Length: 185
Image 1 (cartoon, rainbow, N blue to C red):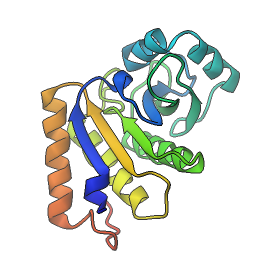
Image 2: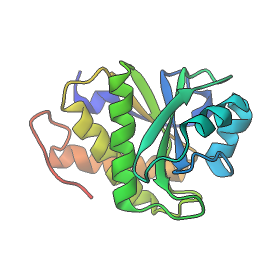
Image 3: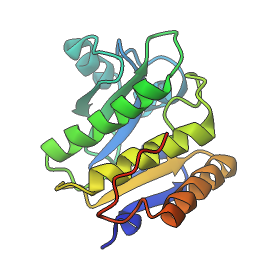
Image 4: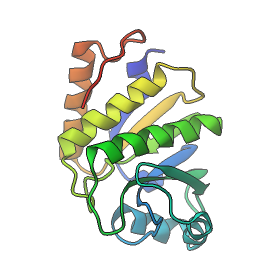
C-alpha cells in the first residue's frame, strides 16, 4: 500500500471514529476546557481529565496518551500545540504532530485520527496546518511504523477541501513517494 493510500481524509466527527487513537488538540497543561478538548471531555467522561491531571503539564510540542473513556477509540493522544490561553505556532504543530505519531507507533497502534490541530482556539491558519500535518504524516510513513492508516477527520467542507488541496500538491511534487524526503512548511 502506498503512502498516499495510508492517509485518509474525511469530513466528520472525530469523537465518533472507531480507531486505535484519536488526537486531541491540547494545551500543554492538558486542561480539557473549550473547543475540541471540551467535546472530548464531555463525550469520553471525566476520567480523561483525571488521567491528564495525573500526567501533569507537558512541553509545548509534546504529546501524551490516555485511555479514551466512553469513546469508540481505544486511546486519546493529547497533542500540545499551544500553552493554555495561547496560540499555536508552526513549530509546535509540527513537533506535536510528529510526537503523536511516534507515541502511536511505540504503542503498536494501527490507526490514528487527527483533527486540524490548532485551527480553532489556537488560531493557526488552516492551509498551513494542512501542509504541516500532512507532511509529518507522510514522513512518518516513510519509516518503519505500526501505523497502517492515518485519518484526518475535518469538521467542515472548507477544512476537508483545504486538506485535499494540500494532499494533491504533495502528490504532484512526489512527496508521497517512499524515497522522497522533502521539507514542506
